[in-house]
Image (cartoon, rainbow, N blue to C red; front, side):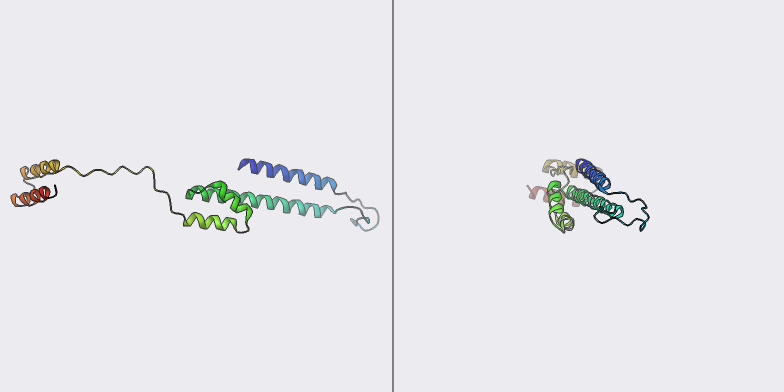
Amino acid sequence: MTGLRRSGTSAALTLAALLVGAAPSYADTGDFAGAPEPGGGIPGWFVGFAVLAVLVGIGGTVWKVTTAQKLAKQSGMDPSLATQVTLLSDDGLDATYLASNLRQQPPPSTSPAPVPPPSAAARLEELKGLLDQGLVTQTEYDERRAAIIDSI
């Protein structure tokens, strides 16, 4: 993207230099102050507005493209496709915004692996430990032991 910014900036500066160099300066010749002679060239104020319009257009385009690329990266889309849509259609930035919000977010890749359930032997040992510590009654122990054995 910085290449686009650099080339856009250098193109705008080159265009401004050409337009300013082509505009004649008007000195007070005794007629109307600032009135151009017939066929005398482009007025300087017009050149200034033209350069300003070109710079605003380039700045707006750069902003639209960078915003579309940020939206695309955040939603897992292809940034170059977002750039193309933004530049080639009138509502390209809106379309990129909608597409990025409608797209399902990719699942996080840092999720922990699922823990396998403990084996029946481990569950029976844990249950026996609870009985030995007096945390469950003999009746609870017998019911849970039967449930574990039935699940095998």
